[in-house]
Length: 121
Image (cartoon, rainbow, N blue to C red):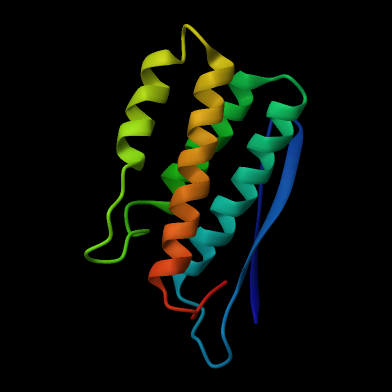
Protein backbone atom coordinates (compact mmCIF):
# COMPACT_ATOMS: atom_id res chain seq x y z
CA UNK A 1 0.00 0.00 0.00
CA UNK A 2 1.20 3.49 -0.78
CA UNK A 3 0.16 6.77 0.80
CA UNK A 4 0.61 9.94 -1.24
CA UNK A 5 0.56 13.60 -0.30
CA UNK A 6 0.73 16.64 -2.56
CA UNK A 7 2.41 19.88 -1.54
CA UNK A 8 3.33 23.07 -3.34
CA UNK A 9 4.84 26.51 -3.04
CA UNK A 10 5.08 29.40 -5.48
CA UNK A 11 3.81 27.42 -8.46
CA UNK A 12 5.97 24.36 -7.85
CA UNK A 13 4.06 21.24 -6.78
CA UNK A 14 5.12 17.68 -6.04
CA UNK A 15 3.78 14.38 -4.75
CA UNK A 16 5.47 12.44 -1.99
CA UNK A 17 4.95 8.78 -1.25
CA UNK A 18 5.27 6.41 1.68
CA UNK A 19 5.15 2.71 0.81
CA UNK A 20 3.85 0.52 3.61
CA UNK A 21 4.91 -3.04 4.25
CA UNK A 22 2.20 -5.66 3.71
CA UNK A 23 -0.25 -5.60 6.61
CA UNK A 24 1.04 -2.32 8.03
CA UNK A 25 -1.62 0.13 9.15
CA UNK A 26 -1.67 3.56 7.45
CA UNK A 27 -0.77 5.52 10.59
CA UNK A 28 -0.91 9.34 10.37
CA UNK A 29 2.87 9.54 10.80
CA UNK A 30 3.23 7.80 7.43
CA UNK A 31 1.21 10.54 5.77
CA UNK A 32 3.62 13.03 7.35
CA UNK A 33 6.49 11.11 5.78
CA UNK A 34 4.84 11.33 2.36
CA UNK A 35 4.25 15.06 2.87
CA UNK A 36 7.87 15.63 3.90
CA UNK A 37 9.00 13.84 0.75
CA UNK A 38 6.75 16.07 -1.35
CA UNK A 39 8.22 19.17 0.32
CA UNK A 40 11.73 17.84 -0.39
CA UNK A 41 10.89 17.60 -4.09
CA UNK A 42 9.44 21.12 -4.07
CA UNK A 43 12.55 22.44 -2.32
CA UNK A 44 14.87 20.67 -4.77
CA UNK A 45 12.94 22.06 -7.74
CA UNK A 46 13.12 25.62 -6.41
CA UNK A 47 16.82 25.25 -5.68
CA UNK A 48 17.45 23.95 -9.21
CA UNK A 49 15.59 26.97 -10.59
CA UNK A 50 17.79 29.37 -8.63
CA UNK A 51 15.19 30.32 -6.04
CA UNK A 52 16.92 29.61 -2.72
CA UNK A 53 14.35 31.51 -0.65
CA UNK A 54 11.51 29.28 -1.82
CA UNK A 55 13.78 26.22 -1.50
CA UNK A 56 14.48 27.19 2.11
CA UNK A 57 10.78 27.73 2.85
CA UNK A 58 9.79 24.40 1.27
CA UNK A 59 12.49 22.47 3.13
CA UNK A 60 11.45 24.15 6.38
CA UNK A 61 7.83 23.20 5.71
CA UNK A 62 8.92 19.58 5.21
CA UNK A 63 10.86 19.59 8.47
CA UNK A 64 7.88 21.08 10.29
CA UNK A 65 5.42 18.63 8.79
CA UNK A 66 7.56 15.57 9.52
CA UNK A 67 7.65 16.80 13.11
CA UNK A 68 9.72 15.62 16.03
CA UNK A 69 8.69 11.95 15.96
CA UNK A 70 11.15 11.08 13.19
CA UNK A 71 13.78 9.72 15.57
CA UNK A 72 13.83 6.23 17.05
CA UNK A 73 14.91 5.91 20.68
CA UNK A 74 18.67 5.81 21.30
CA UNK A 75 19.51 7.18 17.85
CA UNK A 76 22.11 9.90 17.51
CA UNK A 77 21.01 12.96 15.57
CA UNK A 78 22.96 16.11 14.77
CA UNK A 79 20.38 17.66 12.46
CA UNK A 80 19.34 20.23 15.07
CA UNK A 81 22.81 21.79 14.84
CA UNK A 82 22.56 22.02 11.05
CA UNK A 83 19.11 23.51 11.40
CA UNK A 84 20.45 26.24 13.69
CA UNK A 85 23.32 26.94 11.30
CA UNK A 86 20.92 27.25 8.36
CA UNK A 87 18.83 29.76 10.31
CA UNK A 88 21.96 31.76 11.18
CA UNK A 89 23.29 32.01 7.61
CA UNK A 90 19.95 32.52 5.87
CA UNK A 91 20.27 36.30 5.52
CA UNK A 92 23.92 36.15 4.45
CA UNK A 93 23.78 33.17 2.09
CA UNK A 94 20.31 31.97 1.16
CA UNK A 95 21.67 29.29 -1.17
CA UNK A 96 23.83 27.73 1.55
CA UNK A 97 20.97 27.92 4.04
CA UNK A 98 18.62 26.16 1.61
CA UNK A 99 21.21 23.44 0.97
CA UNK A 100 21.66 22.90 4.70
CA UNK A 101 17.91 22.64 5.31
CA UNK A 102 17.54 20.19 2.44
CA UNK A 103 20.21 18.01 4.06
CA UNK A 104 18.41 18.23 7.40
CA UNK A 105 15.14 17.20 5.77
CA UNK A 106 16.78 14.34 3.86
CA UNK A 107 18.54 13.09 7.00
CA UNK A 108 15.38 13.25 9.08
CA UNK A 109 13.42 11.38 6.43
CA UNK A 110 16.13 8.68 6.41
CA UNK A 111 16.10 8.51 10.21
CA UNK A 112 12.31 8.20 10.17
CA UNK A 113 12.42 5.27 7.74
CA UNK A 114 15.33 3.62 9.56
CA UNK A 115 13.52 3.89 12.89
CA UNK A 116 10.46 2.09 11.56
CA UNK A 117 12.37 -1.14 10.91
CA UNK A 118 11.12 -1.83 7.40
CA UNK A 119 7.45 -1.14 8.10
CA UNK A 120 7.55 1.83 5.72
CA UNK A 121 9.77 2.78 2.80
